[in-house]
Image (cartoon, rainbow, N blue to C red; front, side, top):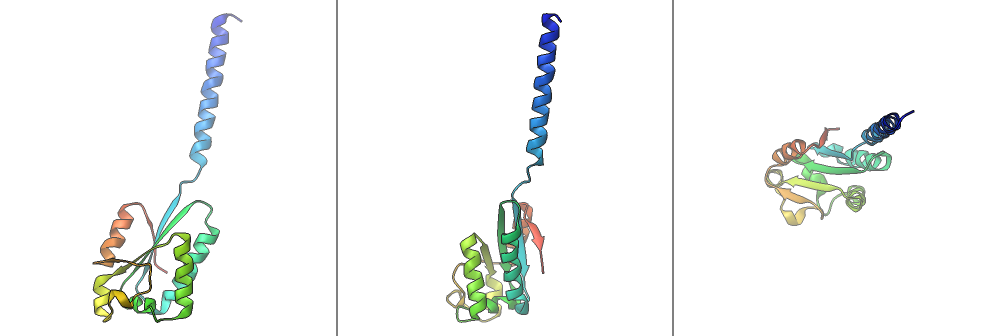
Length: 142
């Protein structure tokens, strides 16, 4: 085998190694971003439970957001259900980004001081929902 043959063989081996490395890198799954949409008061605990399960069973790094509007804002009264408060606190520790609709707060005769701690208030929950989806968040409405 002459020098050109050795060089070609080495070049082919390097190209194969590079191709295999690229394939392995593409098999790695990207982090997941998911937004949960909650407007039904009676589904609040169910949705918070689903989000806890999501964090526990995700196989890739996961970012969760929660959009709350409509009658569901009442489920997050500061003086509300202990279960709801505990579940929300646990999710906040895991990195949950919860948003609540200011229009819905006013519609339910609530003010910011009535709300459980940790929420970011946005003027319109559905607008924030659309923004998150445009940023690549997957949409779940249980």
